[in-house]
Image 1 (cartoon, helix red, strand yellow):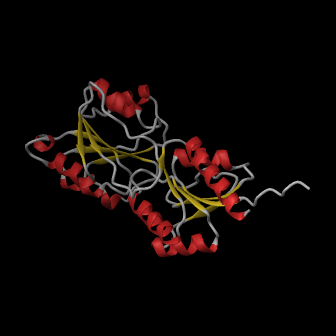
Image 2 (cartoon, helix red, strand yellow):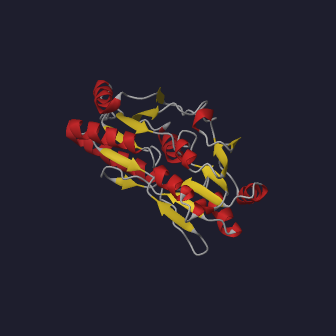
Image 3 (cartoon, helix red, strand yellow):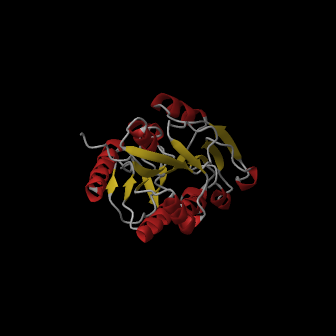
Length: 267
């Protein structure tokens, strides 16, 4: 008699990124795993894979720990955005408490090349302070291109002398915007020609962005380089230490290793 196949390994994927979507495509029809994709629910009409999907928060580390226990999760992949540090800390705490294996799936950060004029800062407040500095960017009014997300515009109210072009997928809260702000609703990926044309049309003199990495929004950096436009680059926050990979294929290999180890323990 042939041995029966092991039961599929219950896996939680914390998603919302291109890398998470790529991993979901690899797992959609893989009978070795029973994945659940978790999305924060901040983007309307997200593309959903053919697997279990959970929308919304967990209620902090304790709520996440309870959910992981109730759903008998055996492995967790944190494929959230590089700037979703709070969620990464919550999942690290929950997995440590339960002894669950945790993997961080995160694309590489962008690196400056010759011709780039980057000013690296630690956070949004530091970026806004740089724009407000009368000895630097704040000494004269500029046209500033903000690509930092709709929820994180308020700090730039401390530099009201500038004119802002804010690009975001979802509309921002008008109460958080600097007084002179134009909102452009758009979803990537973007191409170089369009990014250069946009920045020229709006006479952009400074680009503010997060170091998200990836190819979908990289052309704005190429356009800034070509136009001699300085970039205020907000660097990534620190994430809890855990195994780390950069591609969905590497994450699948990690899962397969844990699935094999789980099967051996059950024999």
